[in-house]
Figure 1: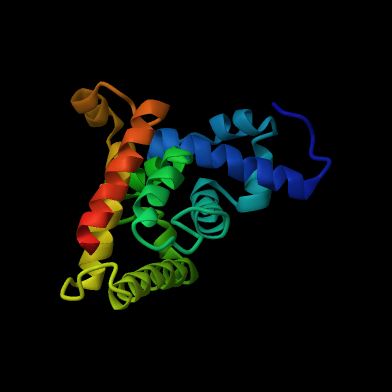
Figure 2: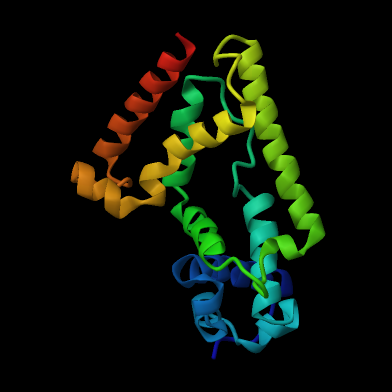
Length: 202
């Protein structure tokens, strides 16, 4: 049992931070309220007090932490060719978000408490990715991407290339002998992504 609540707003923030780590490690189904409370150093009853339960806490993590505080590329992308390396760096330095997204996919199905069960969160996510597709269209108009490529498909392809090592670190290590958080690998992969983006603009 953790200490009694003295600062409600700070307690809420600690719960959200601890929950993100727990959900990243175990997914929604495997996460435990007791473990989140231990990570936060608080009484588990405070989770019910602030959020009403694990499903509501999950939705709060997905909306407040992912969309408003840096997850899912809150900042506008750089211009190419630098954009691909910046996508990779954002994911490399915040791999918990990548794991949360993977768990969301693995656990998707009827009855799953996805963030998208909240229409406002779903709309925020759609707006975020609409902006990213518009970024591709702007890069095409500026001559930094071929104009005949489908903008949505192109964004998914570019993001996939940038995030692959972080999404699948075990395969990255199998193929290269390095983990994506290894500085030497990261420098080499950034150079590769710069070259790949430059080739697309040639």
